[in-house]
Amino acid sequence: KTIVVTLDKEHPDGEAILRAGEIIKAGGLVAFPTETVYGLGGDALNPESSRKIYAAKGRPSDNPLIVHICRWEDIYKIADPVPEIAQRLAARFWPGPLTMILNKTALVPKETTGGLDTVAVRFPSDSIAQRFICAAGGFVAAPSANTSGRPSPTLAQYVKEDMDGRIEMILDGGEEVGIGLESTIVDLTGDIPMILRPGYVTQKMLEEVANQVDVDKTILDANCHLRPKAPGMRYRHYAPKGDLTIIEGAQDAVKEAICEKSRQATADGHRVGIIATDETMEAYRQNSNAASIKSVGSRLDEAAVGRSLYRILREFDDENLDILFSESFAESGFGQAIMNRLLKAAGHHVEQV
Ligand code: TXA
Ligand code: MG
Picture 1 (cartoon, protein in one colour):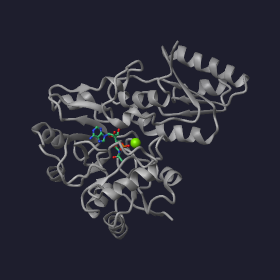
Picture 2 (picture 1 turned 45 degrees about the vertical axis):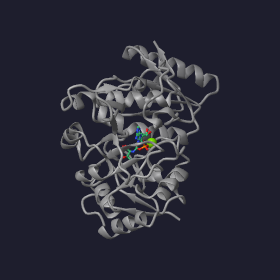
Picture 3 (picture 1 turned 90 degrees about the horizontal axis):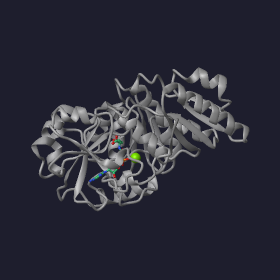
Picture 4 (picture 1 turned 90 degrees about the vertical axis):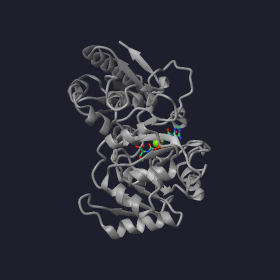
């Protein structure tokens, strides 16, 4: 049976966090909130804990885990060398939604890194996450706390749906997480830093610290035949139950096309869902005949879109829809992360109108 403890962000129950830390030290698993998505934590230095994480998620064990720390200098215990650029990025973005790939030390077992000689390190800014990681001994391996193939959880309730009975404890941080999409991953083992997964910390923000930053080309390109460099980006994550198509084009044309396609599919007997924005919600209500229409927020507010995307994909999964349409979003800034997740959810199925 999984214990769920609801914590107050401002004054979290220290007793409960200590108990969660003890569970990790004893080789158990605890899910916890971070500023990006909920994590499924285990002792990063215990190979048996990493094996349990893969089993609980139903995740292939060659997909490495991120090691979460709660003091920046702890990076020296698990990574060597720590290049100067890593120090500068940490000074600017830690604690926060940035994960750095570095060469690992012998302290980190290969079970945690999916057999690789490199390790992913992240120092989250969420206060509950920080206290929990410290209580757990300082090194917590944590993938997102979803069953493999489902959207990452942005609420404790979604962790419970996926993990009930599979882990010892869930720390519930209350409200929805702040960012809603996973951390930016930057590989620092080569000559030029390379973004392997886009997130809230954008290429432009990184380039203010490191003069040049490359982006793994597989991130947004549907026709790219290269292998993504982050093993996890190769799997078809974030796959909704309904068949999702992204409609791209001028705003009014997109709105018209989605209404038209939705009416047609509904007439053919399908249950249609539409990922709308505040700007287009009303038009779909009136003209699409869709069974379900949900807004991710205003298209002018990328933070809101990023925060609600996974929740809406999960809600659609519960509504037995078989065809989904989504508008597309600008691929600059945080929009790159939004489009990367949306394109993956759609299996890169995009139609231009
Ligand atoms: O925001 C986040 O990063 C969340 C929260 C819980 O911190 N965690 C998260 O973990 O998204 P996960 O396991 O769902 O995604 C980790 C990604 C995977 O795509 C994995 O392949 C990649 O990081 N990764 C981990 N270690 C790596 C390494 N040494 N080299 C390349 N990619 C790595
Ligand atoms: Mg994940």
